[in-house]
Structures are given as C-alpha cells and as structure tokens.
Image 1 (cartoon, helix red, strand yellow):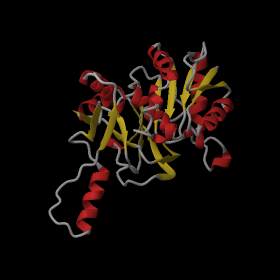
Image 2: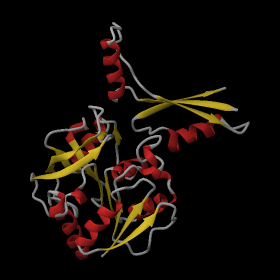
Image 3: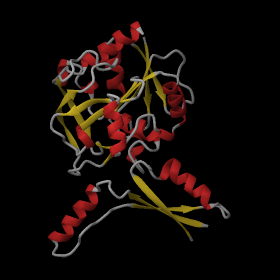
Image 4: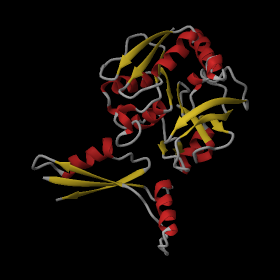
Length: 76
Length: 222
C-alpha cells in the first residue's frame, strides 16, 4: 500500500520560500497571486495493513516538526 | 572536567568545539552518533555545528533520532549540561530538549559573517563571563537560523529569563531577535552563532573564549 504525507508550515508561521515564489510569479506578470505556501510531499511505500495511526505516529515522530508544521495523510 | 562532543555524519564543527573545550582545560572525548550511551561521568556534552545527514528532511531531524540522542535526552533530564551550536541547536530543538524551531532564513540566503550579539542573561554557567547587555562579536554560518516560537512560549521564555543572546541587527528573521536560548534549569544552551569559531586570535576574534572559560570555572565549582 502507498500513503502520501503532505507537510506544510502552519498558518501563522511565515513561509519565506513561499513569499519568494509569490514575488517571482508577480515578476513574470502573473497578477492576482495573493499568497503562496510551499510544503513537502512524502510518499511512503508500506506493508499492507499499516494503520493510519501508525502513519500519523511517523509524522509526529519524524516526518513533520509539529512546532511549525502541520501534516495531512492520504491513503491510496 | 570531562566533556564529550557528539559526531554525526556531516558534522563539521566537532573538532573546533573539542579544541575550544580543551583550551579551557577540559578532557574531551568524541562520541559517534551510533553509540547508544554517552560515557559515564561527563560534565558537559557538546552538539556541534555542521550539516548532519545533509540537512535531509529538516535540519537536525534525522540526527535528533540517532541512537546517541536518547542518551543525550537522558543526560539533560538528569540535569546534565549541554551546548548545541548551529546545527547542534537545531538538533536540540528537534529532540524537544529546547523549545522552538529553526526555519529557513527570512532572506532565503545562507549567511556567513560575524554578527553582534547582546548578552541578555549572564546568570548562567555559559554566560557568566560576560556582562549583562555586553555586545560580543561571534560568527554565524547558517541557512536555517530563523528562530520561531509561539507568542505564548516567547512570553514564557522572557518571563523565565531564558533568552541568552539576541542579535543586535537581526540577520535571519528570528522571532524577537533571538540568537540563543537556555533550558529552564539553565544547563542547556542552544545558539546559532559559533563561539568556538571566535576562540583564537587566528579566528579573527576571541569573544567566544569567555564562554568556555566560564563553563570550566562554574562546572568546577558546581
């Protein structure tokens, strides 16, 4: 089975990379880009039957730093 | 006085830190990250700067889960002293030993230069050799030194006098200009600037020497 983990900086934590991308899009002439947030996608190839709880445990312990990041798990 | 310096794959300030400890008069032992136990009878553990595990995932995240870090956490929970510099600070926040997190620099650039630091709290074993409010010159060399804590936690750090150093001219966007924080029991210091790189005339500055001397003196009397 496969799972996908999306890790994003929490709302309220300034994302300087997202800001830089927003500026660059503006410079390319794309108007109306009001905000950009940049995150990570982590794909996990897992033994069948791995529970969502286990994946969340992986997120809490390693994949995300919950001081500044939030995460979302998507099971395929 | 016995010190250990933990070495991770990608550490690059481990020997500099060991030399700074040695010059202050400590016996230093290098400890590999795969070791499961720190040596017995240590007075202080140094977590050095560098790019442990290539900064993969997040700076310090993989190192924080190294076998040796369980022993490091136990050492600090027992009231042992530790100092984390640069990547070492990132590792200490990733283990949860120190609060907060280090984000990408606000200007997105890697910054390598000397900066001014204000000594905010000189009532610690690390900072006792400085005057409160003294400004010292110490180099920084980081891409991810933008310190973050929540407003609540920041208020707590201020109330408890746990901000050790602030930048005189914030180079990286850190909340409240914070360059270094200490643990509640004053025995663990994490800082982005490198005092071990300001510890010899050849470094171009010696403002870091007082930190290692102060540690040596205060640990000797502890």
